[in-house]
Structure formats: C-alpha cells, structure tokens
Image (tube, rainbow, N blue to C red; front, top):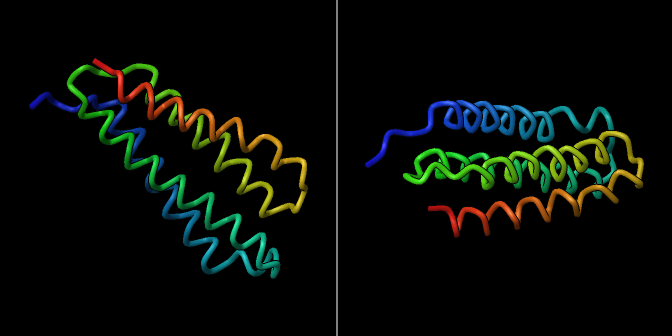
Length: 118
C-alpha cells in the first residue's frame, strides 16, 4: 500500500474536524439563531455532505495514483455546497441557495475524477 498524501490527509482531517464542530453547533446552538425547522434541516444537510466528503478526501489521500482534480473538486464542493447552505441557514437569505448547485456539480465531478484517477 502506498503512503498517504500527507498534505491531503491533513486537509481531510481538518475539514472533518470542522464538520464535527459545525454539526455540533447546528445541534446545540443554531436554535439561538433561528427556530425555523427548514433552516435547521438545511444546516443538517450542509454538515452531512461536509462530513461525508471530508471522509472521501481520506480515500483520495490513500489513492496510489495521487489524484489531483478529485480532491480539488471535493474541497470546492465542501466550500461552495456546504458553505452556501451554512450561510443560508444562518441568514435566511434565499439567494445563497442559487450557489449551492455549483457545489453539487463539484461533488459529482470530484467523484467522477476519482473514478478515473490513475
């Protein structure tokens, strides 16, 4: 087995830790910002996708071919998809939801790039 890509491993770990922190915030403190159940669900979706794709980055760090585009796209997906949903849940500004699909496309492209990584 190939040694992990240390830089990517660290990024995955830090993004995973941030996902847990933000998930905990959503579970325990978001209610001080909003009591809207829809915004609470949006936060849960953001933190779920954030955590899942942080874990996928670990797989990319272990990939023997050292994929380049897959991790970049997955990180972009976390930032754009989850980030826009976190912002939407915190602010209620609906236009932020217009950015979310771009992050979703990044996630899909990241998975496809991972599938074809050598």
